[in-house]
Image (cartoon, rainbow, N blue to C red):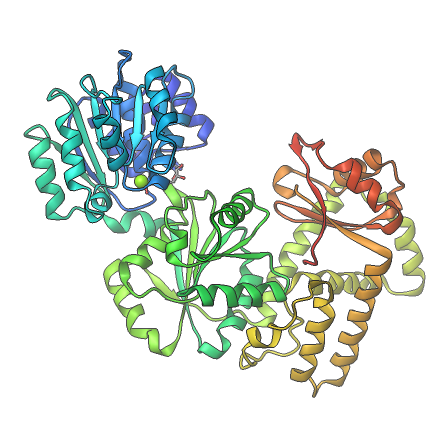
Length: 570
Ligand code: ADP
Ligand code: MG
């Protein structure tokens, strides 16, 4: 069967253009089924699980059919302020080529501001039931001409006890309207509500639970002991190198400890939980969204309502305590037809929870072996080989050939390449895995005291001594490594650039940019690491100020660059 496209759905060209800008290729199942019915004017009860694109399903429909009258034409009720804002943002994007005003109304925002906005005229109102009712009572919000009512995440709204508020709001609406109800689950209460306030024969669209998550999300679990869980996590991260992962912990303390442990191993990780200030949480989320933060460690509560595009991995460092939360967590990746990966770490005591999850979700959750050192190296090796080949093909390395020639006079080229790879891999891995043992002591404790990040590398290698004391060679090598690294620190400055591979940045691009803007010689720029969404370079001390002063704020490849002194990362 041919795949249905957005063009098949009879949407206005303005909406199709907006959808194209959003980068949606195909409608999700709920969109493909709900939009045609809604556009024909039917009342609609739609059920599909989280992350399946319900917002655009009703958003496209109501924006397509809305007739501007100068009064409020549509009202969308959502359970929380975060969701109201999210829906508002989505509708705003979908209506960008039309003269339609969409605005959000929720508690906590200034009511005076909202009253003013309503006076100026709004076509589509998105809000939480309480605040909407408040505005109605103040006679600021008049719904007598509304053509559409949408109840979004209806199950949540009922759970939160909004039923009376919702009924109050509905009483303000004309009988001749189109009512749409979207929900992840369909408890009897909702069916009752629908019966009471919809036309007699609403259309019902229900997308089976399994279809979405299971088809686009690869789910796996690792069997671990509490003791080696952290080590296992590091290996999985090293092996998979996720671009953007949410890692869930059960408690706030768990979040704090994991963040510390990961940061001590130079992962770019931040935590998010209820004890952190709103400002801090927003900043963290912003970094995560922009891609300068790869690992967001969170509790369920803190992660609620977060919709970040392009989350590649959901990792249950601690498994959930019920099936529903599992589905909820996992739904954060693989949003609307994209691919995603969900991993869970399962200790022996958590086997029964895993069994329940497997039963209920019917999803295929496969047991996965914890990556071995060899596998990690091999995966790194493959991607490194690809990168090297890319550089060879691009051919922009002539300024290094002289240096390469010189080295190869004294050493075999194959050794030189191997040495350079070692340098690179050691930097990229959280650990110098010396031998394949999983029963190392809990690292969070080992690293707890390493608060001085400048000193982190050398200390952590010192910590490693105790474990590897049998291995004299390794110890000597580690000590040498850390001395060398410390020496680097004195002469050079490591800088962070907020631009990376995904901006099509090449080494040449970056070096040209720096040398030109800061007016310095090329050889002062070394150790260029271009990662997915940001990069690191090392510059000599004497030019670092020039680079910092002159390279921030300009654009490379049309993207504004921010330059900072790197906190010691990989
Ligand atoms: P739900 O309300 O069902 O939980 P959302 O409407 O919040 O899901 O959509 C989840 C994510 O999927 C959003 O980031 C949205 O932009 C994206 N999305 C929606 N429809 C599509 C589509 N057809 N193709 C790709 N992404 C989509
Ligand atoms: Mg939704």
